[in-house]
Amino acid sequence: QVQLVESGGGLVQPGGSLRLSCAASGSIFSIITMAWYRQAPGKQRELVARISSSSTNYADSVKGRFTISRDSAKNTVYLQMNSLRPEDTAVYSCNLYYWYQGSTYNVWGQGTQVTVSS
View (tube, rainbow, N blue to C red):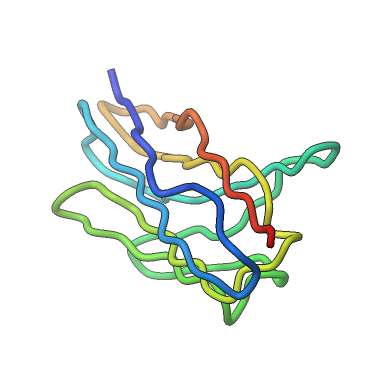
């Protein structure tokens, strides 16, 4: 059974930085993508950033401020968030899309709260 463990959320002032981590464990043969999504109160979940072996993509609202990276040896994905704004406040969830024994699977983390406020 594959599990995702997230860490790094919290309260930060506008303009500050946070780094989220998401570590995957279990029987993962081949990771296709890892990603971060977020959901603010009263809003739909949205993709923040996604990384594959060959590319990264970002929501327009975070380009130039957030950076997604991955440690393949540790099956861990990071989200470095700089110049945070109050509108970045949301629950951030990690997503893993992987291939194992002929099938693909989608796994979600439990979510971590990020609050940007003075």
